[in-house]
Image 1 (tube, helix red, strand yellow):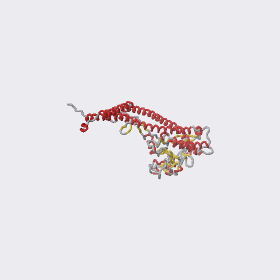
Image 2 (cartoon, helix red, strand yellow; image 1 turned 30 degrees about the vertical axis):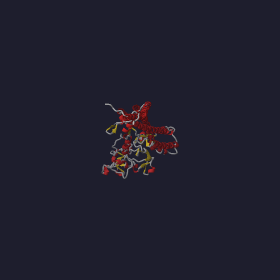
Image 3 (cartoon, rainbow, N blue to C red; image 1 turned 90 degrees about the horizontal axis):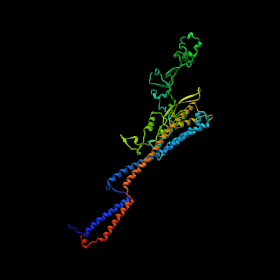
Image 4 (cartoon, helix red, strand yellow; image 1 turned 120 degrees about the vertical axis):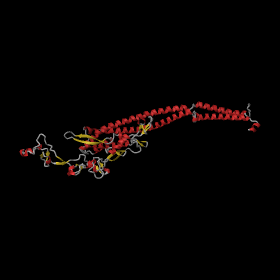
Length: 494
């Protein structure tokens, strides 16, 4: 079969080829503009799929890098705060007046103690301000709750305070009653304490001079014993109300048995600096609070909250450790806990008993003192005691306060080491974040280079291809304009 060649046929073929040349030029131009080897998934499905996977990895790594950088900057602020705290603590510990009190050498005068007390009080408040620092709009040492201030000063509450009338049947209210009650007198063994001496358990008063080497039958043989021996206190195990001795317990002087837990301050809601009670809020000593909970409280409810803050509360974040979950919970080894609990870095919370002895035997004085575990409260309490020293001779207000100061100073030395130890822990975590930043940066750069090698074109080659495609298109136009022509019959048959 012979194909008829006409001008119309040639024009149709020419237009088709010209359009294809134009599309090729447009594609090459688009490649130059975008710099990509493909602009749709259909152009190269295999490469497009691979590039999508690598871009997703890159975006995830970039997000992890951003989170890691934010946490690292937060830890840098925290590290600087702990550096300031450490300097404040060292300033107190190395003060010559403070060291003089502890060693008893070159004991400072009154002005030195009072000034040191004022300085300690100022240092305690300064440390609280430092721990309330922020990174951006978030508080650094407020754990997972970064929007509320972590530390505040408030009136020091009395842990022995009882709302309303104390319940004599409640053993927890023992501090409210002065004497041990006598079940035989009350008829109710459940009543353990009383304020009425007549209802208290009575105990025989022992004779301090009684010597076990002497017979206990002196009273029974009284007619045969000279009066001077009857008056000898070594012959009587007990003392009568008139002070004479006897071996008959029924004749002995009876005294109410006091309650060892008794604390008169149960009537007062707050405590003053000297430990006495008050119901006037403005007269109360300043107590430290962490996220609304008294740091020095031994109340079980407060202890539970503080324990949760320091041991249970977390703020896990994905920083490229291979985030995984198990039963809906993050696997701790695959995430980073960015929550910084301020009370942990100040040494802890609650109180503990420390026995302190001042003076030399036989005139020494010993006291068991409840001292706080956090270093801010320790410094604040030592400062308050020093400010109450006698303005004339610098003596402590009482032996009790001197013993309390020495107990606080002893605990202060232990807590100072603990604070620095926990600062070292923070420094280790800061170092890990810095190393992780470098690792994530290298990973992001590596992935970026991989998908760029697949997606990006050589600019010189792309421009050359575009120029050749344009040359072909321009040539086609010129050939069509100069060679092709139509006859009247072809024109009419179009």
